[in-house]
Structure formats: C-alpha cells, structure tokens
Length: 438
Image (tube, rainbow, N blue to C red):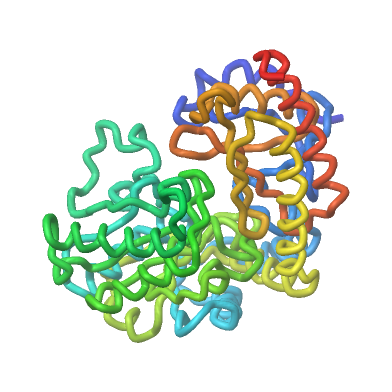
C-alpha cells in the first residue's frame, strides 16, 4: 500500500518557499508513466506539459529507466575533470552528430539557466566586449546573468537589479504588421531598423559580445518567427562580428520537429544553450560552441561540481537513441500538424480562442476577451482548472499569462491528442457559458 502523504500537502506553504510551491496547478502526484501522471487522489491525468518540455520521450521511458539503473551500478557522481567517465564522452560524440554546423565542443552543466550563464560568459571572454543584446519578451532563466537578458515578466527582475550590461529590442510580433503589407518583409525591415536604432543611440556594435535569442519565444507566448527574421538576426551578427547565441533550452531535442530549431529555421548560431529534453527529467544541460571558440575559454574561467553527472549523461544517451529508433522527429511533425488542424476547428467554434501558434509539438493557444480581443489571463486559468477536472493537464505562458501551452511528449498519438482536445473543448465551452459568451 502506498504511503499516504496527503497531510504533508497541507503543510506545503509552511515548508516550501512560495516562489517554488505556488505554481499552477500544484497537482500532488505519486507516479508518472508515458503521457500520464497518477494523482494522490487516485485519478489518472493526461499530461500535455511534458514536465515543461522536458520529458520529450514520455515519462519514465523504459530505456531511460534502464540506462539510469545500469549507470547507478557504476557511478553516481563525477566530478567531471577530476575524474573522467564513458557516458559524458559518448554523449559529447552523439551530440556532435545531431547538432548543426561546427557546434562540437561542450561545457556540461545542470540546468537551462546554467547553460545560458555559460554562453554569456564564453561570449564575453572570447570577444572581450562587455554588452549583450536580447529580445523583449524572452526568457533565459532566473540566475543573475540569465536574468539580465530575460524580460518575459518584470516580476522576475523586481528588486534584483540584474547586470545593466544588456540591451533589449523587440521580438518578432505577428500582430504588428499593417493590413495589406507582406508580414515577412515587414518583420525583417523592422528588425533591421530596431538594430540600427540600438547601434545609433545606445551601444555601438563594436561593444556587443553577443545577441541571444529564443528561436521560438517560449514563456513569452510561443511566438514563431519567420525563417527570414531569424536569418536576418544571423546576418546582422555576422556583419558586425557579434556572436549569435541560440537559447534552445525549450526548443531542442525534437520539440520543433527537428533535432533543434536551428535546423527548422536553417540558422546556425555560434553558441547554443541546451537543456530540458536532453535527459528526460534528469538535471543536465550544456553550453555548446565550436572547438575554436571553446579553446579560448581557459581552465578555471568556468567550472562545475555536478554538471555532466554520469547518470544524467546515461539518460541523455538513451533519449537520443529513443528519438532515432521511434522516429519521433517525424511523429512530432505529423502530430503537430494534426493537433493544429483540430485546434483551428476549435478556434472557429470558440470566440475566446485568439491565435493558434505552433511549430512541431510546441503549440500555443491564445485566450482572449471575445468582445475586445485583449488577453484574458483570468479566463485562461479558469479553463486550465476546468480541463484539469476533466483529467488533462495544460500549462500557461505569455507575457500576460494569456497563452495555453500544449507540449505533449513526442510519442503522442492522434488518439491521445483527441482525448486531450476533447477535454479542452468541453472546458472552454463551460467557461464561455459561465461568462455568457455563447
């Protein structure tokens, strides 16, 4: 019989920091398997969050579990550099084969924010330039360096005073284009103008070490830019000898239907930060660059105790193998297309659905006030709660918390998508009835 720890849930707010324990929906679970969580309440919940784009091959995939068990028979801890072990070296080799361009040298860490910290430090060290440019609405982490380039929500920066050695320009905005104007050309021209204004009035390009960008805006609302927009970012960086950093923490490992968004958008950065889906839930990340760049980052300029943990590296090797063997990149493309088609049908039915934005299985569903078109955060959380009552877990994103994040595992099937979207349809219908919208 499972231990009943429900009494501990009542003490949660006393024992755990509110900044950690007050996320949505705070569902107590006892087990995870495939596409599902199993709740302390005895119910099974379909998980359309994948641990926030982390368990891309599904929860507790048998091959991942087996790799961890086998690894635990050999090593539990590095530390890399003091000792060396097979799993970290094999993982570096396997990653080199699936990453774009000459991204073939790795600094392994534990989390996405650490990978970003490494990317920023590497760029500044190599270029000997002080400034970083990021995009408004982007999220790159909550440690002080990564926080200095994160602007998805001002509350993350409140009272923190992160480094002032950063500048921000607008991210691609699909709603900014005037009627009758080609949206791709407009976005590219506006990007060029934004950089020109930045370089003319705030910082010279010769002082900028790197531009950091999410190829798809993650927490900022699942905004998918045109290829040409990201390609223009690459061209501007090349023009001014500025390093380009891709934050692929959320877009990596098949989420966009390719190994990385760099493949999807046909843009190769100079430095990449990867994490989340790399090890199916175990803490692992990497700052990635070419050997030519990494060789300029000498011993002692950066370090880690737990980064590249042997068990996490073993899990990552299993993840790469699973994605290849089960053809999950193709499945992500096909199931993403199918899900969007179903959501577009719901969009016609429900006036509270604004945009549906997607690439692969990275899907955002905007919730709006049907009479004003304005973002509706309160409505979104009501819909999420109603969906959860029906046994389906979604998450949220957007600068105003107005976008439902739908990020099922890459193993998802049409039948599972239908089940989840049926619950979402019912939840939205109930909400619209409550509000008198229908």
